[in-house]
Length: 293
Image (cartoon, rainbow, N blue to C red; front, side):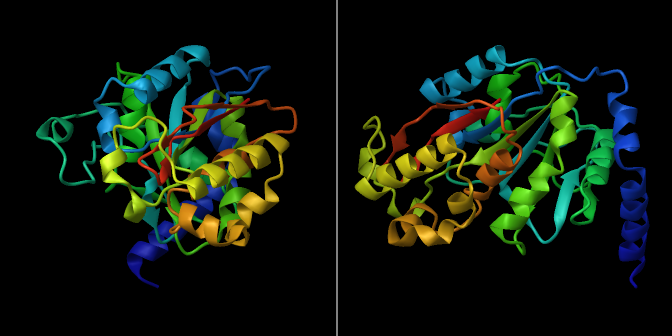
């Protein structure tokens, strides 16, 4: 066994053994809430939303005022697809500008929120379905910071990212999310960041400034997703390949859709569901977002 893998096995094995008791080291001063922290799925859309004052970014700001102030934020972003599951574990995760062709002002943005290595270790310990690697070479990609900087502009709340294992199917991701339930009870805000309908190849660039413009198939699939989420019927959403041609157009690749399954996997029976930023953009994208709890 390679030395790096051997050390990783020891670390993850020890983390699994500590389990919830390890988690309680970070949260020992945090009282369990009678009403657990809500969970969000946020359609993040264009990176420009990170610096623009528009209806979407303003709603993110407002959402932060409507929910309890979190002890920390954990983001599952469409833009961290990895082999295996990883979590950021540095004290100050760098701001990643993982895009091209945008104004320099967007590249100049730094979001200096702290991380929390201890919370990363303890979160990894909660996950028993797979070993979790502690990452020191990622940071906050634009699926995270473009949203969170509007919610918490003072950058005073620890922000971590959990990667999406591209070797696993949708059921795996839905079930893994359930293992994070203890975080909600201790005031950690979990955000899935992607887009329900996301087909960049079919973007109508000439309709970018036309509010709410969506192709018929995009609007239909967005309504289908919303109805299933409202009904608590997650099975078709997990088995999304069964949606046929319209589903293939809405989800040509899984990375922007899978964060939704993390949010849904954390839903409890009594949690209420609400939608916000429910609009199509440029024909083949929807910004539709979900608050659970």
